[in-house]
Each structure stands twice: as C-alpha cells, then as structure tokens.
Image (cartoon, rainbow, N blue to C red; front, side):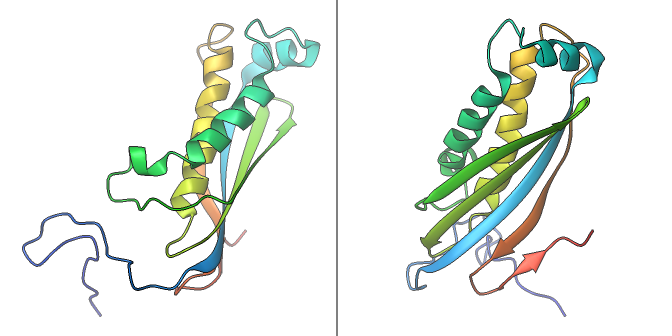
Length: 158
C-alpha cells in the first residue's frame, strides 16, 4: 500500500506540512549517539586535563541549545516549543554514550530535536578534544523512543 509523501505538494515540490488544525498533545523523544574517544583522550579526560575545559559540560549545553534550533537547520521542520531537553553522558572506558531526551506539548513531535541534540552534543565532544586526537569518531546516531501524537508510542528493539 502506497502512502502519499506528506512533504510534497501535487506538483512534487517540497512543502511544510500544515499542522494548523492539529490539537497540541504531549510528546517525547529520546535519541542516542556515541563517541569513540580513543586511549589518549580517555586518559586526559580521566586526569581532568583537557586543555579546552569540561568536555561533558560543554556537550550537555551544546545539545540543549541545538534542540531549540532545529527549524534553523532543517528546512521543513516546524517551530515548536521545546519544553524539556536533557542530555545525559555516560562513559565506559573509551566509549561515550550521549542520550538526548526532548519533550513538548505541541502539534508535531520532537524526534528531530532529540536526534539533533544528540548529534550536536557529539560534535561538541569532538570539538573539545580534536587537538588531542584527530581519530575521535562519532558512532551511530539513532532514535530510541518516541511517544505521543497520531502514530503513538515507538521503541527501538534491543
């Protein structure tokens, strides 16, 4: 069964979906990104000697700020009220896992906000440590859960 593309008009031109008549509902989304730090960066972080400062604090703030800027980055994204944004960073050895949670009470979801927050937090980590090791790598960025809206709840398996 084929569904029409919602972001294309009758002539095939890109358009922003009209959500004017939708009722606001509570919506949440969680996304994750990973950063492979490598032994040099992990050791410097363990010692608290990163020359640029507190890597995790900068990543947290960058992710929160990014969640609020999605319509500036993605041309068909709606301007919504991001009423909740939280970035959690968990490190196991050389692997840093970034989890971004976003919430709203609006007419469209916050999946892109959560994904953008996780991505930008990961980019901020790289920016903070790139002088120590150019091989630092951002791993998979993925949506892990969303709730609310017409499509309801969804959770990534595994």
